[in-house]
Every structure is written in C-alpha cells, then in structure tokens.
Amino acid sequence: MNLDILKEKYFFMPDATRGAVRYLTTKQLEETGTKAIVTNTLHLLIHPGPDVIQQLGGIKKMMNWNGIVFTDSGGFQLFSLLHSKKWKGIVHENGATFKSPKEGNTYELTPESSIDIQMNIGSDVLVCLDDCRDTGLSRSDAQKSVERTLKWAVRCKEHFNSEYGGTEKTGRLLTCVVQGSNFLDLRASCATELSHIGFDGYNFGGYVVDKEGALVVDEMSAVIENIPKDTIRYAMGVGKPEDILRAAKIGYNVFDTVLVTRNARHGTVYTSKGAVRIKNSDMALDQTPVDSKCNCECCKNYTRAYLHHMLKNEEATALTLLTIHNLTFYQSLIGGLTLP
Image (cartoon, rainbow, N blue to C red):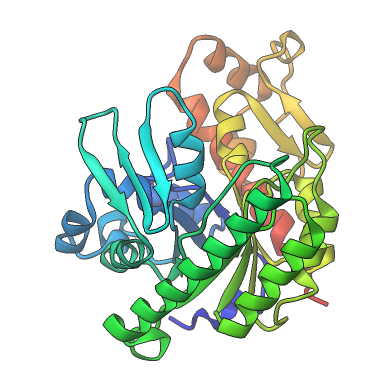
C-alpha cells in the first residue's frame, strides 16, 4: 500500500479504539467511504494483547479491513485514565506504569514498548509515545512535557530504526506528537525540534479546544508553521465539522474524533443543514430522511420518525443506522476538500 497518499489528501478517521467501530461491521464501515481508522495501543495492550493480534495475522486480518490503520501511542489515554478514580498509575521518565481496573494486571508502557506493540498490532502508521498534560498548566510543567516528549520521540525513532529497519524496511510510517500546551513558543519549538529529528508526520497533541469549546487556532498554527509541509499533518481529536474546515484551512489534513460515532449513539446526527437531535419530540411524525442530500443506507431507506421510534425503544439497529449516516456525512465533507 502506498502510504504517501496520507500526505497528499484529506482523511477523517473514525476511532476503532479496540479494533472495531461500535455497532458497525467492517463492510458497513467501508460503505461509508472510510479509508483509514485509528486504533489505540493502550487498550489493545490490555485486551486482547499485541501477541494475540500478531498470532491472528495483525489487526487488518483480524478485522477483515483493507484500509489504512493508525495506532495512537496511548499517551493521551494514559493522561486521561491515570487522572480518573478507577485507574492507578504513574508517568515517569521511562514511560508509564499503570494498573488496569478490569483484571488488575500491571502494565508498563515505554517509548520502545509502544513501538513494539504497534508493530505487533500491524499498524500502517505508528505514533511516538508522548507526555500529554492538561491545559492550564504552568509554563515550567509545559516545558517539562515538551522536553520529555522530545526525548521519547528520539527513543521511539531509534528503536523503530534499529529493531525494525525503519520505514524503508517495514513500509510503515512513524509520526510524532507536538506538545506545548497553550504556550505558542513552546508549541513552535517542540515542532521545530521534532522536525530536526525527522518524522513522516507531525500530530497536534493535547487538547484541541479551550474551556469555551473553541478550537485553539493559534496553538495549531504555531505547529503548522514549524513542520515540513510534505508530511502527514494530523489534528488529533479535531472533529466538529466547522473545526475540521478551520483546521484544514490552517494546513492540517488528517483528523479523528469519537464525537461522530458517540453522538450517533446518543441520537445526534450531522446534516447539510446542521446538527439534528433525532430523540426530540418533533421527530416523532417527521417522515423525511435524516438528510435529503445524503445517499447512505440510513437516509435512503428510513425516516426520522422511524429512527426516533427505535431510539425511544432502545433498538440497537437505530444506533447502527445513525452511525452509518454520521460517518458517511463526514467522509463526504472530507471528500469535498481540496489541498492548496
């Protein structure tokens, strides 16, 4: 597979965190026009485990998926989970040690083991482990996050090259994550240093919206201005339609978010006329499709009233149909963009 296309076109990736997009078969996923998905190192480490996935022929064979697979390194998940009440662990200079509340096992994730896990999973595009932090942290803490992220990026690249032969031998791409919180100079310097190390792609890490929910355009611009233009430019977690359009205008070309599928499961769908809540009472007698301009399985065959009825009665079929629609809408949105 020629992965250079990831540097030349726009892509929206639904989150297939554990090797599946919830409520969809792989065939249904393909029919939405989806060309790439993103899975997660940390969650697949816990179950079924990278060795099991490797024995099953890799994530693509396991899923019967012919598209592109990214695998997030787990940096953001480590940050968010270790700050929850259920998960116990610590981030340290060598990586992170944590205990899963599900089965009680203790795991260690290092820059090197993160690469090993992603290789065993069979990812097309790997992501370096990064030190993700909350927004609003002090400058000194943000600086420490950048320094650790850079050190880990070097370790990831050295391990990828020495143990596997790098991109030339494997055909896989290695991307890094740019940190720096809301400090523009730290974002810029982190991006610059990572560019000097050299990667196939540069990913905007951390939080992509501020406390008011607005896209952090200045921080994202500081990164774009300091990375090579002929690489993957991945805006991690950017997902609202208007945010994708703004991020694309800045220069990003790869996007993902859980919002698309999660909102579908809660009855919110995206249309050419804006977001619609199918659970609302005014949908009960609405005999129009979700979006008259959409040609997906949901819109071609079912009315809002029927979908409203199924949601109210907790029929899982509604979740499948609304997920199909939302992903089809997003892929159509992405397909209409043209790189400058």
